Image 1 (cartoon, rainbow, N blue to C red):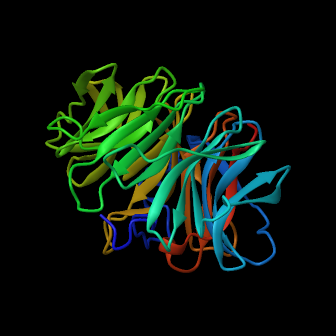
Image 2: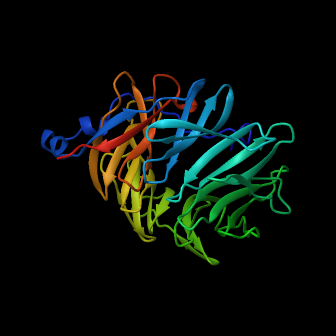
Length: 338
């Protein structure tokens, strides 16, 4: 999966133009909704990173390298607040944020090679114990209720497990790897877990598994869930952004190569395809339901990603002129008034 288990996996992307918008007829482009970027200031000593979550009320949180330490940073009122990392750990990755401002993530100890899931709130970091029988666990997502989703691994590469900590409890639900459940993806507000399942994806809740149909594609991978709506990517004449409203109902998202995030109102953030380049996806894309909009890149940057659809209707991501693997400057996008 990764050469080192604490390194964040990011799909490499190199395209510099919103290919999908350029390919559409003029009347379709002009009728789409323009999203304007705002570049947020980096904290002193930061070389960049990734925005990964929002409370939907103006706060944006992510993983940024500050003074050569990878740690959690939030933006409040447009200004950075360095949240740091738990004592005794060398790195902290923020992976999600819920409407209460609780952040889900993973703390890494390079000396012991131990990783532990955490919840970060106004009182600080709260580390979760690694479940018995496993060696480290990543914190992946947190829902509105405060339930925390994680993925547990074994150092001997034996079977892992999906881990769910209910809000207010310390004893997790353990879902061992099986033919249906291979790894965790995301967590909905009703407790439904989006999981990888062999070559596809599915939904797990209270012991019941439902596979997501890729039809009419032969294969699809779901990446995010919210209020029962699932988004991801399917193979349909190439990589295409996809949306499920039921496990058996999927539609392609026009002009999209991959859908990465969906908010409580169905707003979806993702990436356009890059059919002419060495990789399959390009810059940022957005859809309101299934209606595509236009995402404008910030001035001076050739590469930009919209990775988070926040509940206030904004988008969050980053922009860079370098490698996407390292992230870049934090950017938010808002819909222009009509």
